[in-house]
Image (cartoon, rainbow, N blue to C red; front, side):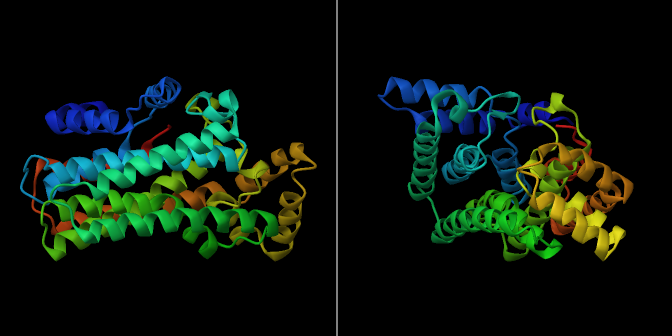
Length: 328
C-alpha cells in the first residue's frame, strides 16, 4: 500500500488527527492563521502521526484511536514542523519540499516565532490529553531536549569538521529518530500496551528513524532536484553524513584528511563540492550508506515480530521498506 492508501485505511482516525492539528493551531491573528495554512498545505507525507496511529492499532488489536492517541499523533506533527521552521533559520534555507521557506518569504524572526507557536501547541496537546500519562510528558520532554542537543552537536561538528560515525549516529538519533520514538511509544502507551509491545514500538521507531535520515542523506548525493531538496546542501553546510563517512572508511587516512580539509574550506570554495561528490561515489560511499540503511530497516522489521499479526503490522513493515525505496 502507498501512503495515500494507508491514510484512507485509517479513515476517521486520520481525519481526527487532521482536525486536531487545525484546531490546535487556530488563532485570532489573521497573519498567523494564513502562515499556518501555508505550512499545512505543503506538509509532506506526515509520517510521524501516521506511524503513531498505526502503531496504536497494531498494539491494541485494531482499536479505534482514543483522545490521547489522536493528541499524541497530532503533537508529533506539530513538533516536527516546529523543528523545521527553526532549522530553516539555523541552516539559512530558502527552500523546503520544493517551495520557498517561511524564513525566505517572511524573514528569520517570523520563522522562529511561528516555530515557537507550533512547539507550544504541541506541548499543549500532550498536556491536555484527557487520559494522558506522565510517561508521555517525559517522553516528549526528552525529545525536545534531544532535538536541541542534536542541532547544537551538528553545528559544533560542522565547525570542527571532525565528525565520525558515532557522532553522526548520535546527531541523527537526536534530530530524527527521537521524534519517531516519541510518536510510536506514546501511541503504545495511549492504548495501555504491555511492556513487550511498548519496547517493540521503541525499537521499531528508533531503527526506522535512523534509516529515514540515512536515506535523506544519501539523496543529498544521489537524488534529483525534483524531490524538493537541492543537491549537495549538506556539503555546503559542512555536514558530514553517512555517504561521506563511508567513503572515508574505504579511502584510507590520507585521503580522509585531504577531503576533510576540502570540507573545512567549502564556504570559501563552494564549487569544490563537486570534488567531494566524486570522492564519495568513487570510494563506495553510497554503497556503504545503503548497507547501513538496509541494516536499520531490517532491525525495524525484526522489532515488530513480537506484535500480533494484523493489517496494521503489515503496514508498519511496508512503511519500513518504503523508507529504503523512497525517492522523496
